[in-house]
Image (cartoon, rainbow, N blue to C red; front, side, top):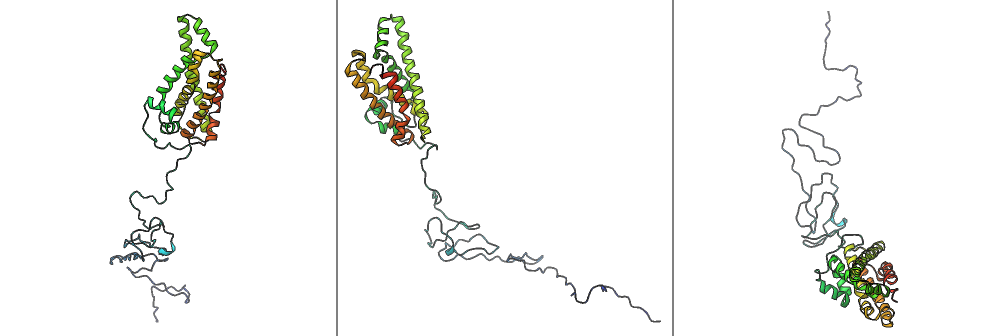
Length: 304
């Protein structure tokens, strides 16, 4: 009887056109696509990585390894920073590249600019004592306002304005007659209330001037602006007030001094707002216009 041979490992359903699948030997791998570095075989030594050599004009410093081979030549990349050292414009800030700067150098910065609404710059000088402050408002107003633009002057402003209010009562004809005719116990409250009223009036008008300056693009602080505006209001009207106390408000000399000091006040207010808020003089004059009109109507029109 003929015997039958039974074999193993043969697939009778596979077509003869299909080649047999080859098993990949252990430790041998296909090279990865896209130029990636091959993984080290198990049990074999790791491959040595080749670092790209610096091109002409480089400093001999290794670049970061680029496994995808996408490095661009130095000549085709826009240089940044300075070209010191080895020359050549070999600096770039592409991903994976290094860039060298000197200590404290900022090649991307555009420089510090003083902009409206931003933080205020460093003060232009030290704080002035009250004597030099009052003298500077009269003798060198522009430099004084610029130097004191970041300092509050509440002490001199409140004291000078309060004293100005005490004397302003005697500069108005009707108020002076009421104070002179009244007894001392009644006259003291009138004079003190006038001093407090002028302080409050100066605070309100200074705040209005500061608000208008900020609306027009100014960048100054409100405390120096209000305090300096109170000093300007009091100092500029002092000559007219001194003559009005003795000559009366209807005197021609007092009236001429009133108009002259009002024009001087307008010039000082314009300089103050311009230096404190970094505004051109037309905007500075517009910001102080309400305060000038108020001073003319409240204080000077009664005598002029």
